[in-house]
Length: 310
Image 1: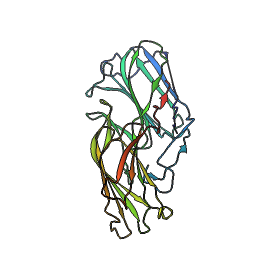
Image 2: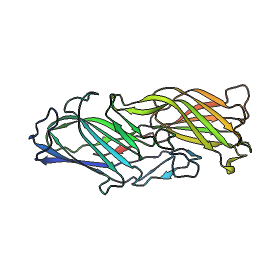
Image 3: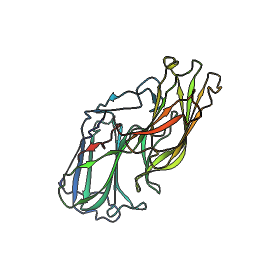
Image 4: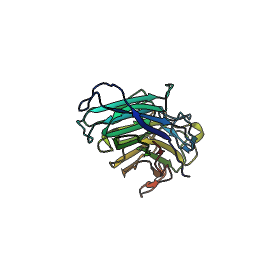
């Protein structure tokens, strides 16, 4: 089932003159234009990895589609670079952060003099950050449950030329992927946890290249519910930021005494794509001499980018 997130943002540009702080390369007395962004509600649903019993900061087992409400996003980050073409060394003209707890969440107001700018809008969950280091990037802050590294995140970067009143559309697209592991054979009665080690996961999304960056290993720990024991097709899902580099997935089951249950499985050369689900399916406990897991791609997870109207 396709699940779409219409993210409606209205932007209206109209003439407005005032004094403002001086920015490098601009005239502090130049005429400015008032820019307003309005964020409306969501009307559809997606598969989220939060809000259920067995989870760790966005990791959920046996996930089911959950309705998305207007407060699904927790933070919106708006960045303006320039004037001129985007550069990793270039200045940030404006930066605005709106948190969902603020009374004005969903409204971004800015003022820009005439010129050409690069505009970046990123929207996501709590902890979404921007770094002005070289390369410029967005990422999530670390916390006690910092596994996985990413939460649901949307992004767009575009050039904007201001010379008068403007009213235009822009599209925010999901930049994360979803990794799903489907264990086809029955979970043993003595199984306690499943450890999933991912060899290369991204900690950053680079604004300049619009690709994932700074790879490191990531380990997910899943406590197996008693209700899942003795039953097949146990599913594990996690959001992934790495959508550019192949990685290996090692899956190992342990009992309450940390003894391995079965020999475990390593699946090499796994890849993920933005806004797409990668599915690993196979047997973890009762497999023969052939490869126990197969890799598939499912475009049903939001194949159409999130649409945002400015």
